[in-house]
Amino acid sequence: MDKSKGFMKALRCRECAREYPLRADHVCEFDFGPLEVVYDYDRIKATLSRSLIESREKTMWRYRELLPIVGEPSVGVEVGYTPLIRANNLARRLGVRELWVKNDAVNYPSLSFKDRVVSVALSRAREMGFTTVACASTGNLANSVAANAAAAGMQAYVFIPADLEHSKVVNSLVYGANVIGIKGHYDEVNRLCAEIAGKFGWAFVNVNMRPYYAEGSKSFGFETLEQLGWRIPQHTVACMASGSLLTKIHKSYEECIQLGLVPSTPYKIHGAQATGCAPISNAHKAGLDFFKPVKPDTIAKSLAIGTPADGFYSLKVMQKTGGSAEDVSDNEIREGIRMLAECEGIFSETAGGVTVGVAKKLIENGQIPRDESIVLSITGNGLKTLDAVMGHLGRPREIKPSLREFEALVKNESRGAKSAAI
Amino acid sequence: MASSRQNTGKTTTKAGTASKSKTPTKKATTAKKQSTSASAKKKRVGQRSSRQEKSQSSRLWLMYPTRLITKPIIWQLGRKFDMVTNVRQASVTGEIGIVCLELEGNRTQIDEAIKWLERQGIRVEPVEINVLDA
Image: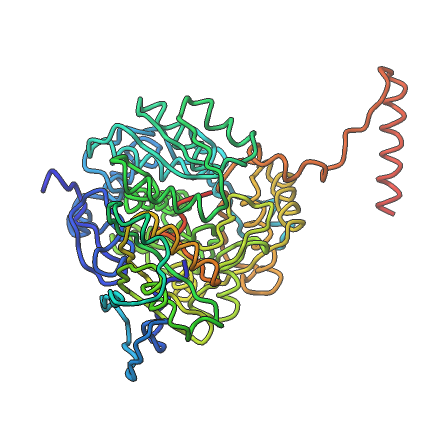
């Protein structure tokens, strides 16, 4: 075994398949296609087994042979293995037989699935000798980089649009990261960040570390399969921002089939977007294999990417697995958040409302049969997007400090409930 | 971005260039430099002030709306800004044109060229596409 590579073989262009050394790089020199990590699956197969995985700590690193690090993880060692819960109440509400919720709203430490990708990127960055990490983000990614870098003792630069809501900035500032607000519209901020990433010798998690970073999402899929008792759900619904999560869930399922960890059974992966930013969903519904960029206008800010980098590959995955794509309005997103909270006690951010809302639509229009197994991917915590539901949940009823008044209130309510039942 | 990763085997050619190849290449990964003639007489933007600046290259995805697909935008860009333009990948359908372009020039030229492209109605993204993540 080459100790400098671990179980990885090379970086490979997803377009032309040219291979590159395992360095901090993300674009093919020939056609500018994105690079992806490829592994030595024969060696992994000879090493990895269900029993070995099950003997390890309950974190995402129990699948470490399939993650792009050489040695032991050094950042985010507690990340992952979030609950997969059997959502019977929500199943009843949606009228389906078998429904599961994979809940990354409680992922450690920053309460979103981004902790998976960031801990992989930072662990890899550290073993490559980087001491400064960076990212450009409007939300969860920024929080996760700031938190994980702080815990790892690494210097972090977080670039944000200067007009970002203060509540979101606080979630990065608190960890002591260097938070830099950039004035300008989205495209200008985007281009400047790409330039900064190219100029400074930092580990920019979603730029030069992207091939490693993106692989972290696979752990979401590995855990789902293991927690289901080593089987593939017939339907997985994943929200799409850049589309990376959906493609990596697919990759994780395929890797587990290839390694003999799960039997090969038919499955479909469905994509969920907000109607106010649905380039991938629109393209899929129109039967196109390319998407048209859009200007985002949705409360689902964590999915608001108008030109999704993995949009094309997401379309391919949905096409290949026979999955569907749908999108939901802001009101349907709020309804999805509420439904998940009321039925399962899980308060999801807006992206989760998108996933639940889209699943409901796909069930109602028959694209997800009611008697098949379904997994919903919940990617972030509702406490991060309180603004989205504020003012839409009613207000607490108020009474004077009087027992009599409270008794009257209860009486009125039970009377109201009875008449409603009649 | 809806990139030339969107290539579907549909007609794919160099979008918006001045070249009029009759045979569309299936997947245009050609690297044709389209520098303009040094003797071009037209006024070139940013030329004087920026000549002394260091030359650099910028890797971009350009997305053409339908109305601009047939326009020789890259040829115009090269002439107007006196820059080296190098198409690395491209895909054209009836609705959209996508070009992966390497621009070589000084900082001022590149900035002005991008602004000009945006004024024409072309969406310009870095090669990484959405660096600014959610």
